[in-house]
Image 1 (cartoon, helix red, strand yellow):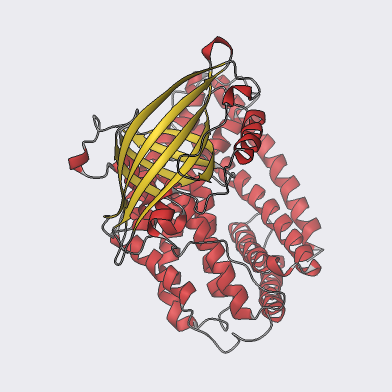
Image 2: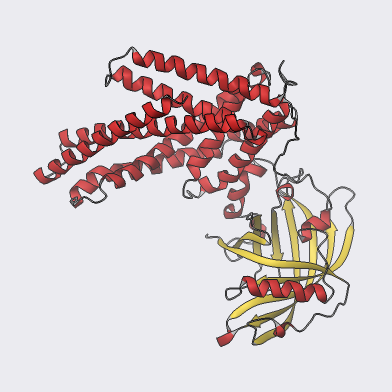
Length: 498
């Protein structure tokens, strides 16, 4: 089955029962209306016993009646008034068959292996008017709802209320939405007491919010805040990785590495012994995601190598053909890992770490002091690696491996400075800039090194390439050699500022 996804942009207002709606034909661009038509809607909302979906402003329901009977999953978009909605009809997934996988997969990182149970039933008498523009183009849909809800939670109550909803359709504009908001408020519409019908039905939930710290935080407060930020980022990219969205693997891997860098960069703020198992599991997750990410990067690089070149189909196939299959295998492995009990236990452990962190001896020192200490340690490690580099023969395998070590330590330094970003310390930002330049330059150099080895392998292999293809490989190799020289020069300039 294929879930249909759309972004809904709507206004919602609480109104008195029986409130008379204004004439919406006065709104800009509206030339006619269709309706009103009344429907009886009956919905059962599902969640875990801990309300993991509701706490993240997500609703999952099974609804009958109206024009869109079926399964619905609604998620925030980060845009005020807008939500992503996934729908699967009962023809594709009958109500008795349970929640369809297309709607479960995007929220697995939240629900994990916990069962979904009914948490509320809501019946709505909905009267719908569709506003039309020129040539009967649908602009918006206005719904007058009389709602009866029953919470199925322990000690849950029954509630009744009335509300108006104004949703933009394909021809709707921000100007229309703004005008509608003004008109509906003037006609008796009040700010909604809850963001959704479910929220109003079940009452308050432990809503997840972006963590914040005070003006003079302790080291523990800063570390826990950073852990929560990157845990939230990991959870946000999880569903994107599951559908192979652009850059999602990269961003989820970054979130995983940042959490690890906090655990290793502030070992005396948290009890290192009690977080070691989380670090090990994060390292494994990063490696699995890394296989998929590395193949993504290589596919991009392969395409870039041939950009502006008159490459034959045979050369294109030889250079890019195998990497796609490698990526597909790596992505399947990542998906399998992300559906395992082991992965869900890791997420549970991260949640527990943030809620009840095991404190170390430096938990109560000022956050600025803790960041300064972590930065000083990272800078010292980089300088030692640079001293070791100076003793090696330039261009040798050991020299190139040492550059890779310096790059990894620069990345660790950058993560340490990023951990202090909420503190808004100028010197931290300056050091972060230098670390980024070093990391970027050495990353570029490493790419050219890998590319040249790949080009040499192609040239030496039995690929059926013509002499003109081999000549082009040599020209690309020369370009990569020059790019590598520029990257090393950029690294040396940045290293002077460390």
